[in-house]
Image (cartoon, rainbow, N blue to C red):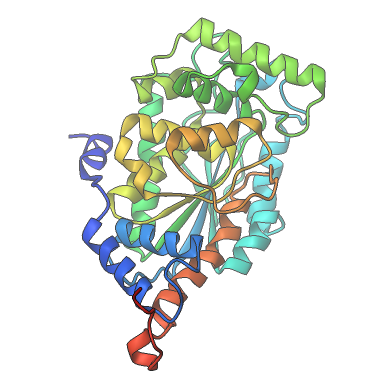
Length: 353
């Protein structure tokens, strides 16, 4: 059995008994039932993922995966592909938004080269899992071979398994790759069945002509490659990206180990769609950090059945929205663990009518 097959086989449903115990404790705390709203939903969801009614997730990391995309040649981005390696260097130097927000959240940033076109100099904090120097142009043919799609997925699984073995409790997903909203739009169009023009957004800030080129490129990609929505690996191979596959692998690997995954924006949403196409049960291990300004992101989350925690009109990627949610998760778990029950505090409970 391959690593991918073994991982899929180990993904289980949420622990309903742990969720029930968590709900019972939440309802016994000194507050009206449900009065902490989404924080209580987070506690209950995390209890189901971890199998613990009072989970603790102190060791956190944001895995930021980078890769380039041949479809950038179609003029779908406001920035040149040279920005991908430049931003990876910025991540490694600690100067990007994700570095700032991850530090605030108490999370490590793990930077992974999944397929940046320009070769990067070795760095002690750079994890290299290069599949190739960027994908091929999906508007002209498949992004990668099926074998490379499996390699990307298994690279993500391997990375998160290594981190979990070191004690990781909570993982978030982030991305970097010029033009990566284009393959993400293609993935969303295939799996949701929605029109490309409803899903495509301005990404890095393209003008009207750039948006029209993006819609045309995605439309051609679907016509040329004819991806099958029932074949998640094949979908990744035909219209995906190396970093999208890697992030999908992180989600699968974490779900198999009952580690919650906080997914970021549009690119992480595309990776979640791929992961769920491969193993539908993975959805139960995902926490949607936010809904981004990309119009297709809300539609992705609705298709996945995930409710975003935040709505801040973010569209940066990198894992920034996911990092912002980590302190909220800490707060929710602290409430569960630190509040007194009615009985412990000697406070009268709700009167029966």
